[in-house]
Image (cartoon, rainbow, N blue to C red; front, side, top):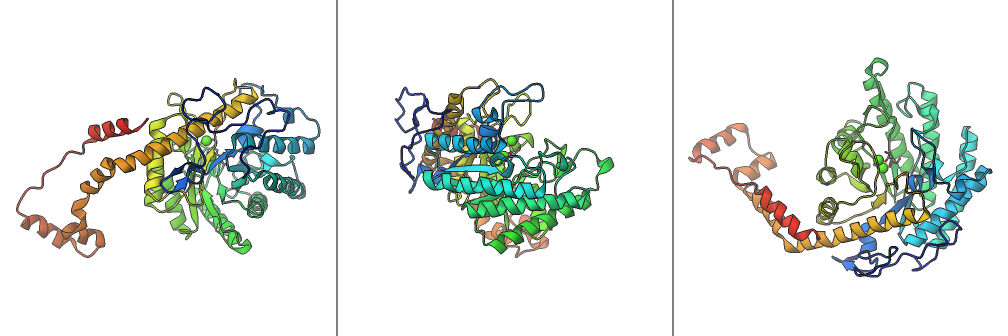
Length: 445
Ligand code: XLS
Ligand code: CA
Ligand code: CA
C-alpha cells in the first residue's frame, strides 16, 4: 500500500492526510498512537489490528432517523442518476479509506450498487459495482475485510429472509447471498458475514420457531457448500445480535450461535463476527463475548462500536472506552492474535455531526484508541500479574483428582471417595477482584 495517497474527491479534498505524528501532536487529523509500522509483539500495528471502515454508516446513511429526514447532504445523495450516484459514493469512500490510510473496508451488496428491484437488475447492478470496486482496490491497495448481503432492508424481507414463511423470498435471499459471496471471493475478501437482522420474530402467534430454525440451518449449510464450491478460503461469519429490528433474533449471542452450529452440523465451518453493541444489547460485556468465542473456538472478527448505557439501543457509536478495548485486545493477544478477522468500525457519527471532517475525525480517534489499547494489552502481558493470577487459580486441576475429572477418566464414586479420604474441609480462597481491578487501572493508560 502506498503511504500517503491523498483524498481526491471534492467532498474530502479540503481534509489533510491522516498520518502518525506521535502523542504530542496538536493536529486533529494526526494519529498519536497508531503508527502502522510500529512492531508490537512481533507484528506491525497494521497487521495486528486489521482495521476496516464500513460503507453503510459512513457513506450510505443520510442522517435520517425515525423522527426526521437526513441532513448530511453528501454530494452523492443529491445526484439524480442512481448509477452515477453509486459510482460517486464508491469513489468518495475510497478517498476516505486513503485519507485514513487503513487497510480494509466492508460492505453490503446494496451499499455499493445502484438500487435494483428485480432479481436480474440486482445481479447486473452489483456486477457493475464490483467491476469498479476491483479497480479502486487495485489503484489504492485497500483490501476487503468482508462482504455481506443486505437481506433485511427491502420490504420483501419484512417476515425474514431464509426464515420467511414464503420459500420464494428465501430463494431471493439465496440469490443475494450467492452474488455477494461470489463478489467477496472475486475481490479477495478475507471473510463473508451473515447478519440475520430479520431472522427472528415479533410474536409467537404467527411464528413456528422450530420450522424457522430448520430453514435458517439448512440455508446456512447451502452457503457453506457454495463457499467450498467456488473455492473461497475466507471464513463464513455469523454476527450475533439479540434483537432490533426483530424482538427475538435467532442467533442472539456467541453461545447461541455455537449451539446452532452444533445442531445443524456446521461446527468448524462457521465462526462469529462479534459486535460490541450487540453484546451489550444482549446484557453481556464485549469482553465476555470475545472470550467466549475463543473458549468455543469460533472467534472470527470484530465490529467495533459502543452503545449508550442509558438508553439500551443499538446506537453504533464510535468506541471510546480504553478499559473495555484494552481487555478485548488482551484476549486477542493471549489467544495468538487475529487471523482472517479484523476490526471493523461498524460505527456512525451522531446525526448532528454533518461535516466531512466528522467522518474523518470519528475514525481517527477510534483508531488511536485501539492502537493505545494494543500497547496497554502488550504491557499487561509483559507485566504478567493478571495471567499469573489466573494460572495459579486453576493450578489444582493440573493433576490428581482434578485432572482425572477434566479428562473424563473417573466416576462419581471415585470423586466422592476422594472427598471422604482427603480428611479435611477444603477452604475457599479470595477471588481478589479489587486487587485485579487495581492492576488493570495501573496498566490502562
Ligand atoms: C446491524 C449489524 C449489521 C451487520 C452487517 O445491527 O451490525 O450492520 O454488521 O449486516
Ligand atoms: Ca455489525
Ligand atoms: Ca449495531
